[in-house]
Length: 73
Length: 360
Image (cartoon, rainbow over all chains, first blue to last red; front, side):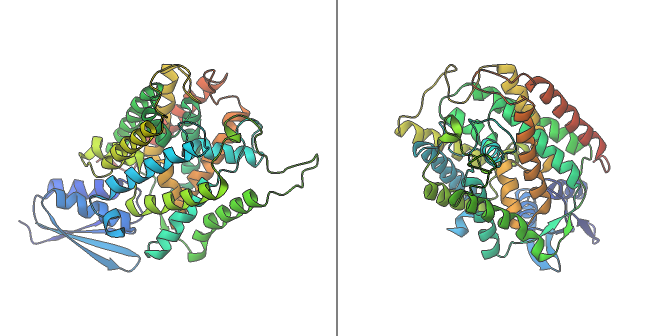
């Protein structure tokens, strides 16, 4: 497990790209901490649900101009 | 209720309610197997505004503006109103045109495809298969890096334009102006045909508002459902179309509106290939644009200018499809339905190949 935090900027992207970008990173990193930046509540939920279905813990936070979904495993 | 709609059970509940309401709307007067259809109703609105001259399909369907307003109110109430836009608006406009071409060759949007199946119209099975094929082609583009780019924040007031336009449309239904140079108009209402069949105004209005709210909260999406399932084995949204179709079938059956077969189905034709290919085109266009027409209406209500542009593309596509004799009827595909489908597929292909960032 790497200690580095990986940030995925999926802000402004249409469905299903925020999930797709997240999937790409999770496939490459079976564990660790990944922060996904999104701009809509829908993307926030989609990313969190996708990660949770794959055994990641997802914490949703508000940020300026959108949301941050923090994924940990 | 909101907790349920936004939970993992949300699509079951929202899909079931939406399917039931749609069938009830047909029972109360909307055309058969067309209780709610984003494509047909947008086409009727285009006709009512005089953008096409197909006299049988002109009515300012209140369900569409009410759907936008229901989503807008829901987004405001739950602090999800967020004006945004700027993700390849021109491409989205043409995708809206293409989606409508395909839907009018098939005779229905994805919502109506499921409603037709739930009413026993087996011709729509070709449409549903076409929809899945179109979604699969869209997925292939997505795997190869397709993207229309990121949207950015827009000024707060800009997101009010679609809700205001929806209010204006409702104003025209309740108080139709009589300013036409040769008598009634400029708003046209069909005297016969599907455009003349409608539920009572206030019922349509209330149903549209409720459906818009349900769709906004649950993110109900008839195209995202297939896309997520086929692309990522994610079944969350798919539960919505299962519930939608099951509820629509159950209510149809209870009301004696289930008439299985291929022949003499309401506002449908039996040309399998074009039922299939029409929906291939629609499914592809909706997938590239990120969601089904209901979802686009819902996002337009949330302040998404890109979705609004897509909806305006659908409105334009409806007018073009009828003016260029590309729309089908119960008799079959229109004289230019085949070339319109081919042009639409080529255009979607160009957008799909051209708008790529990098392969995944």
